[in-house]
Image 1 (cartoon, rainbow, N blue to C red):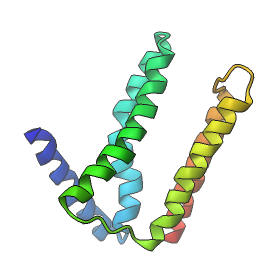
Image 2: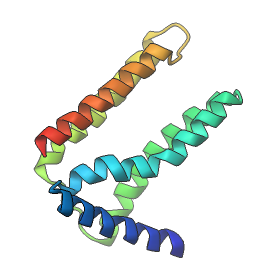
Image 3: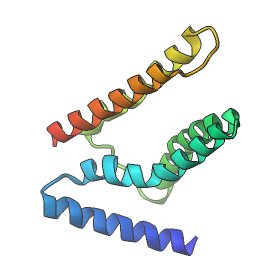
Image 4: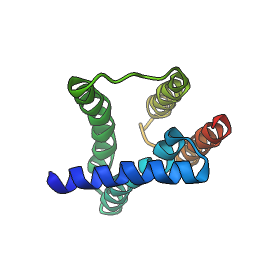
Length: 138
């Protein structure tokens, strides 16, 4: 826990320095570099699980992580100190909702409830659109 806290502090402090030195917003750094860094372990676990035929582990890893982040992280943080949600994040919350809706439609509209290669391409393109849009917004 101590290493995670120290590492977390290191990441936050340096992300702010990087954002300021590049003239980028802290929010843009957080939804790109920090999000990528925290999600890479999930990606590795999911890919390895799929390659070994453990699809439930791959899906559970992603679903569990997202539910944990929304309910636990966003639940615990304001218990420590108030968490003001800036107005500009409304669009990003909408995108989070929309991406979940797209996933639900893909999974439940299909006969076999499976994600196919073209579905993966669609989701990755949607993410790239989101990052492009966030960069344009600043």
